[in-house]
Amino acid sequence: MALIAPPAFADVTYIQRPLPDHVYAGGWEHFVGGGVAAFDCNGDQFPELYVAGGENPAQLMRNVTTGVGEDLVFDARTPEALAVSGVIGAYPLDIDGDAILDLAILRNGPDLLMQGLGDCAFAPFADLDFTSGDHWTTAFSATWEAGNTLPTLAFGTYVDRTDPDGPFGTCDATLLYRPQGQSYPAATRLEPGFCALSMLFTDWSRTGRADLRVSNDRHYYVRGGQEQMWAMEDTPRLFSQDDGWQPFMLWGMGIASRDLNGDGYSDVYLTSMGDQKLQYFAPDTGGPSYRDATYARGTTAHRPYTGGDGRPSTGWHAGFGDVNNDGLDDIFVSKGNVEQMPGAAMEDPNNLLIQSADGSFTESGLEAGISNLARSRGAALMDLNMDGRLDLAVVNRRAQMGLYQNTSAQANWLIVQLASPAPNTGSVGAHVELRIGDRVQTREITVGGGHASGQAGQIHFGLGQATAAEIRIIQPDQSASDWQQVTANQIVTLSH
Image 1: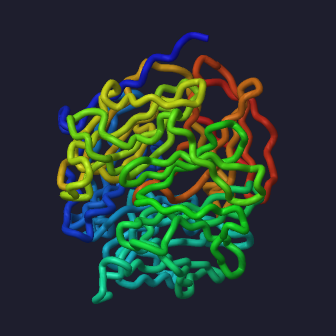
Image 2 (image 1 turned 180 degrees about the vertical axis):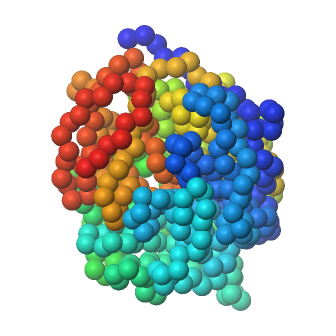
C-alpha cells in the first residue's frame, strides 16, 4: 500500500479576512465554555458556524466559500434571535422532526431552544413548553428514547452561583428533560451533580438504549465526586461498581467517542487538566467498563510540545477525525490555561495526535500547522469546503477564533449524510458501518460531548487508497439496512 502523506493545515484566520472578528470573553463565569456549533442551515451542504461569545454576542457565520475545495470564507450574518450574550456553547439537532436543524443553546442564564426556519433563520420554539432557570450551563446531550416524538435533553450545570458557601463544593445538578407527547414538563434533577463540563448519551452496549455519560470537574467538587454514567431506566440511576463501572476522578473538560479498535463498540477520549485519558471499552465484562490505554499509545498529551512551558497542559475540546484520510482516526485536542492558574502551562499548544497502523499516536500539531498558543476552548473538526478533507475551527478565550483549512495531499474519502423519517430525522443513536475487505469502521450518531461544541450533518470516513467500500446503517431498534456498494470521493445520502 502506498504511504499517505502527513496532515497539513493552512492557518487562514487572517488571510483576506475569511473569518469575521470574534472573541469569546468574560469573567469567571466564562473561564469555561466557548463552544461552536457546525451545521448547514441553508441547505447548500457547506456548514455554517454558530459561535459562543460569552459576554460578547454570539455570532452565526455563514459559509460563503465559493465552491468545492475553494478557500474558506465566512461572513457574519447573525439573525436577531441568535445574537444573544451569555452563550457558553451550542449543539445542532432536529428537535421537531421537520428535517431542518435547530439549536440547543447553553448559557450563563436561561438556556434556549431555537427552531430552525430554513435559510439560516431561527426563532424560539413557541409550542414545546420548555422552560429553563437561570443556570450556569456547561454541558449538553440529547437522544431519542423509544416511542417518543421529541428528543430527551440533558443539560449539565456547573457551580451553583447562588450558594453563599460556594464555589467549592457547590456543584449543581444535571437537568433531564424527558418529553411527554409534544411538550417538555419540568426537568428531573439528576443528583448528585459534580460540576459537569461534558456529557454524552451513548449506546455503549449496542442494545438500543443510550445511557448518559458525564465528565465532571474535580476542581469544584473537591472530594466525594467522580465521573458518572446514568442508566436511562424509567427512573434514572447511577451505574456502580456492581454494574462494572469503575470510579475515577479527573478535572474533566470534554468527551469524544469513537470505535478505535474495530470491535464495533465506542471507545472514549477524556480531556482534563494534566493528562488526557484514552479508554477502550471492555465488552467482556457485560457492563459499562473501560480500560485506560497504556502510556505507550501516545495519547496522554500531558505537557506542551512547543512554546517552552513545561508545566502540565489543560485540555478542553476533543474530537476524533481522520485528518489525512488514511482510514485511521486521529484526535484533536484544544488546549489553554483556565486563566492564570500558576500550576498549569500558559504556552499550551493545541494537539493533533495522528494514529499509526499499530494503534499508537504521534503528536503532529506543530508540523501540521495548528499549534496555536491562545487559550483555546471549543472547536469543530469538519469538512467546511466539501473537498473530503476535515478542516478546523477553534474558539479562543480573549483572542480571535482560528480557522485552519486542510491542505493535506488528497487520499480517498466518503461523506455520508443520513435521511431518516420523522421524528428522529438524523438517526441519532444509530450506527453507520463502513466495510473495506474484512475491516469495519463504525460511527455512532450522537448529539453531545466535546466542550460546549456540537456538529451535525456529516459522517466522514477516510478510505486511504481504497476506491470503493460498503456501507450500512443500524438503527437504534437494531434493524439493519442492506450493505450498499459505494465508490470513493463522494457524498452519499443513506436512507433507512
